[in-house]
Length: 290
Ligand SMILES: C[S@@+](CC[C@H](N)C(=O)[O-])C[C@H]1O[C@@H](n2cnc3c(N)ncnc32)[C@H](O)[C@@H]1O
Image (cartoon, rainbow, N blue to C red; front, side, top):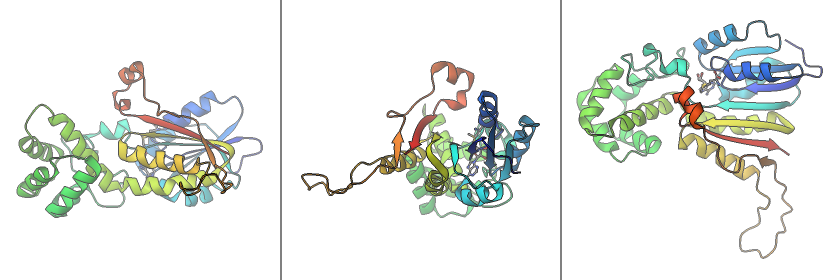
């Protein structure tokens, strides 16, 4: 594929079923060209259907942590006008029992975005030591009952099904907050299985490098671990001065590399949450490269 000319260029680093890319094509008033990437082959099949007939789209299987490889395969050497990252899991993944993303649906403990490689959630649950389980539950879930939950898992394993794991957690933490605990534990497993936070850390500088001056990046996060990485990256690149704090005047002549467009994180409105309950925890940040 080599279209370009005066087309505006975009990268959708989390193509999913193609909703954002579809919306970009629908909203564009001039011809555009988009590279769409996803780790999940099923997502790519859905996106292909939704984007059928769009000559400006290139769909590639891959991890956004390796964005440079994907851009090389795309073959476009110019820097791009916009990049989007809609982090986390897609609705179609949550709703399919055989993917294991939902504690409400009976399915295998898988939780991989890319089912062609990597460890499954069952491997994490059944092979990690009690200390390792406690550590990931605490680190990614900030869950104060991490030790108790890890001990219950170790006592009851092997566990292979989502509902088996949910039952063990229910018994370990009875009470009104059980749904919150269950969603925290499944979130922790998804982050660990897919090495999500490392991928986001790899993505940010690469994406920034592919933007042209004036180009924009929008990131949607769904938990505080993801959002913290994005916020930190935006903050560091938007700094106006790197002088030591004890200096009375600035001497560094440092130039910020980006402008933050969302001074406060943007959350979905009531109508949006009603239309799509999976969006309730979304947090959006945007920046413009200087
Ligand atoms: C919230 S969904 C995106 C939905 C999409 N914006 C749409 O409108 O249909 C997130 C997608 O990112 C994908 N994903 C998660 N981590 C990824 C990674 N490291 N590299 C590439 N894709 C990833 C998931 O497989 C999932 O399809």
